[in-house]
Image (cartoon, rainbow, N blue to C red; front, side):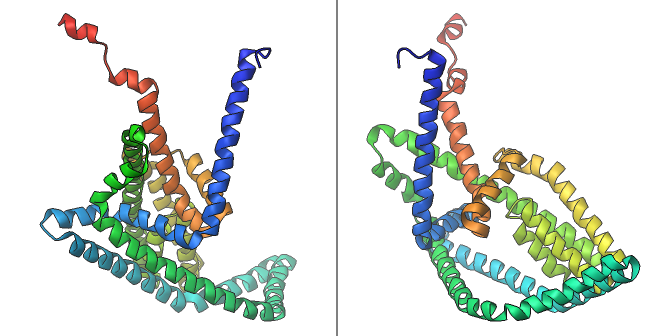
Length: 357
């Protein structure tokens, strides 16, 4: 190694570090996949704790007992989430047949105006029916596995809810437990980094909730003005979808446009598209920079890469968890930079000027 130039030795050292970190990360991801029924509820509970922490602390500050405050917080989130899911499902079930009819009429209209191209679209509809009939047996066989997945998801959600209760109630003991699990010399550093990571996740969840609420209100008002049916349910869908940055808002907005197309026609659908685009522009250029910049700063490219990586690892659940975990990693990185980088020298002024005053 002494015969190698210094830049080559540094490059080799960095490559070794990258390979080691990548290997450890791969092993951790594999272990999380094996124990997903235990890992996923813990991660969801941490997100729920970060989101519900301010409400719980407010209840404790007014003198409520910790267990009772945790119970009320969990009941409130169940009521809100359950109500939102009920409203969304009801609205989509009421408008599902209208969406299908609207798409069928759109295909026929294109067939009349564009000849062969439109006919191909009409044929696509018929071929789709044939494919559904052909693979109906396969779909029926998948129902059993689908039911098992639903049951597993419900079980994990219930476990996550119980974990949220315990995380909220016993939040004052977490610091002591964490310090007892790490070596004494590293306890302070680990505690500070853990606090910084959780504050980043808490800030991200709080900012995302505020942005989601503003998006849902604006789109709901726009759909109500346009007379689109199920506007309240579609607004609730926008609120839920906003927790997956960029992609969730796009998909929920697409559903709102389809419902407008199904019930009110092409012109109203264009107006609904304008409302959705305007709200997305407001979010991207005003809300995200103003609100999220006060909690955790992540470039949109980093967010998209995190969502893509999460989707490739764990599907929809990975998309939901990827950005908060990335926010925690950014928080830890900023803390390490402040403690061991140039920020440490900036925060500790030299004593000479103090003595000269």
